[in-house]
Amino acid sequence: MRAERPNEMMKLGAFFHPTGNHVAAWLHPEAQIDAGTNYRHYAQLAQTAERGKFDLMFLADAVAVREGKLAALSRWPQYMVFFDPVMLLSAVAPVTKHLGLVATATTSYNEPYNVAREFASLDHISGGRAGWNVVTSANLAEARNFGREAHYEHDERYERAIEFSEIVFGLWDSWEDDAFIRDRATGRYFDPAKLHVLNHKGPHFSVRGPLNMARPPQGRPVIFQAGSSEVGRELAARIAEGVFTPQHTLPAAQQFCRDLKGRMAKYGRQPDELKVMPGLNPVVGRTTKEAYEKHGYLQSLIHPDVGLELLSNALGGFDLSEYDIDGPLPDIPEYLGLNSHTAFRQVTGWARDEKLTIRQLYERFAGARGQRTVIGSPAEIAEHMAEWFLGRGVDGFLVQPPYLPGGLDDFVDLVVPELQQRGLFRSEYEGTTLRGNLGLKRPPSRYASGS
Ligand SMILES: Cc1cc2nc3c(=O)[nH]c(=O)nc-3n(C[C@H](O)[C@H](O)[C@H](O)COP(=O)(O)O)c2cc1C
Image 1 (cartoon, rainbow, N blue to C red):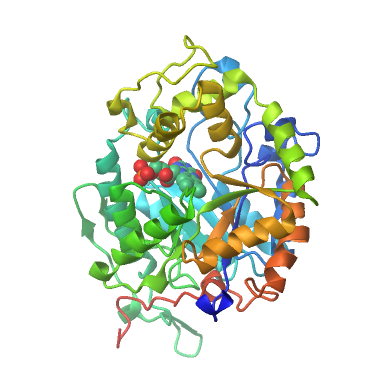
Image 2 (cartoon, rainbow, N blue to C red):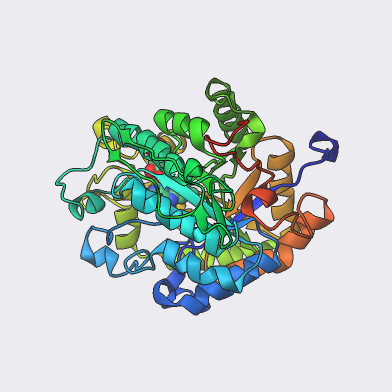
């Protein structure tokens, strides 16, 4: 089987939701209860991930407190208060050496100049380990913090994202790599011929430039993307070098991978310039039985108010409070899915195909927050990951421990060695930059001679 991808290793990212991925993680006695505002917690997680030779740590973001019924929100603290991710990663940079530092920033409620500057700064501070997860936001609460009463429509968000990211890439090329000569003898600090003014004027943004930060060490921080809709895939094929996506079966993951990589040629890109890393929510036990007990315990902590709220969010705000929790999902109007395509289809698909009750639906969705859960012994989890990787359904995984820090310790101490023994994952870092470890080329400046 190993002959199928003989010279390749899988890539691993660690997704750190503050207390963990499981919606009830904070209730677990071993979870860091004040995680959202505890810097030491993240520093420790980052060091553990680096001990496990992870390619990167990833932080999600929203520029709002979640909205919803307070009865549910007050039982579900995830992302109610949490650090600005770029600031947090800047503080993690000096306590790590190799780990990639990937933060989310939305193209709907930011200005390209600010984003270009922040991520270029993070790349310099970390010595070339920054990554930007380009999202368009799926959240009306964010719109309300930025002078709008309504969120941009789905496809308009993606149009803005394309223009936004092109501007950011242009700003990162403001200074050529060798623009700063810093020559005391001639008294010349930079070469004026190597400074470029973007002068962008487009439908959504007008940005003159240049950026007040030197070209990032990686040329461009690594670009990630997490939208799986038609326009989301098109954006990924155009700009992404890593893609996070919820995939639940190997055939669906294979199809997604083929589809996405098949779209890249029209943007002049090769398939291996993009790493597909679906979410994986591992519940690791020393034995299968112990793993199922751990999972059952976490599921038992989900309060119905929280489960219904999460399901309602996935269903475009449809209020389920009047329905029998142990009855079927009512018909949900299609238009409610317009702003959350992927989650909407997933939940309505499970209800239709597997006839799950409302409680079963929220337990499945809430437990892993839409990502695939794999429960088992270290060897079982490693086997599952091997099958998906060797079967070309994935290039790697975005590991989302159910609670933190314990769930990460389990993965690093128990599953990583299994992957290493199978020759599927590194024992030492290949390089010092995120690009180097992911096997991605450093893009030349658009202005550099010869490029
Ligand atoms: C692993 C993962 C992480 C994500 N992180 C964020 C995030 O931090 N902020 C955000 O607004 N959206 C986030 N999203 C949502 C996506 O950016 C996107 O809005 C969502 O997948 C729906 O996109 P689609 O309509 O193209 O399918 C994430 C999605 C995935 C799968």
